[in-house]
Length: 87
Ligand SMILES: [Zn+2]
Image 1: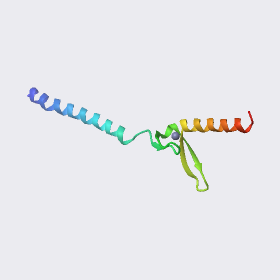
Image 2: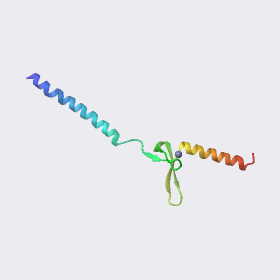
Image 3: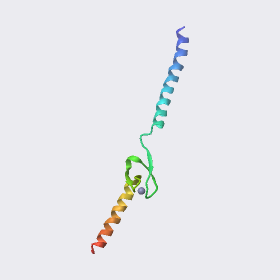
Image 4: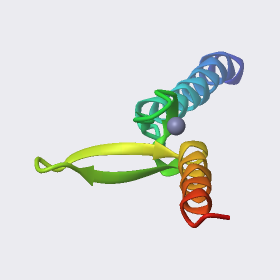
């Protein structure tokens, strides 16, 4: 009697553990913590937490900018400023 009990309980327990693990994995994929957005300049995909969002224009359209493009803009600005200051 005990033997039959084990035969029934063991696969059920294993099945429930597998089901629980599968559900956890599914939850991870269904609720991604990172939202992917496109950089307005280079058009590459980045997680939203690595982008700067700016409302631009009279309609307040939101553009995202990646760190690399912001750095390039900064360098461009610096070179323009050093030319216009006559150095
Ligand atoms: Zn970019």
